[in-house]
Image (cartoon, rainbow, N blue to C red):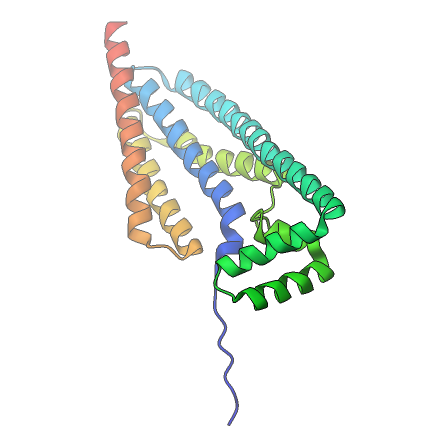
Length: 232
C-alpha cells in the first residue's frame, strides 16, 4: 500500500512582505481617502481636491518608504550587532556557549543528556547559525531587508492611494464625498479579506477591522473639513 505524504501548508514565510504590502495599501487608501473627504467637505473645488490628493499621495509614499527603511535598518543593525557579539563569544568561550545552547533545548523539553548531544552536534555543524536561530530568534525567513520593505511600502501605498484619487477625479461633483468614501470603504474590506486569505486568518474579522478604522478616519476628517469649511 502506497504511503500518503501529508503536506502542511504554513504561511509564516509570507509575514514579511504581507505586512509591508497590507500596511502600505491600507495606509494609502485610508490617508488619501480621508484627506480627499476632508477637503471635499470643506467645499473645495475639484482642482483643489485633486492637487491635495496628489500631494498626499507623493508625501505619503515617500513617508512610508523612509519610515520602513529607517525602522527596518535599525532592526538590521541590531541583528548584525547581536551576531557579531555571538560570534566573538563563540570564539572566546565555545564551551560556555554550547552549555547555553543545551540549556535552551532542555527548557524546551529535551532530557539533559539529549539536549547536550543536540547542542554538541549543532555546534559542530554550524554554531553561529544554531545560536542565531535558537538563542536570538533569527531566521532567513524573518531577516530584516530595509530596501525590500521600503519599496514594498512605497509601491503599495501608491497603489492604494490611486484608488480614491481616481474616484475623486471621475465621481460626480454632487456625490463626490459619498462616492469616494464608499469606494474606499469597499476597497478596504476587499484588502482586509485578501490579507486574511493570504495569511490564513479569519476573513470576516480582518475585513471588519479595516472597515471600522477606515470609516472612523474618514468620518473624523469629514467633520474637520466641514467645521473649517463652515468657519471660512
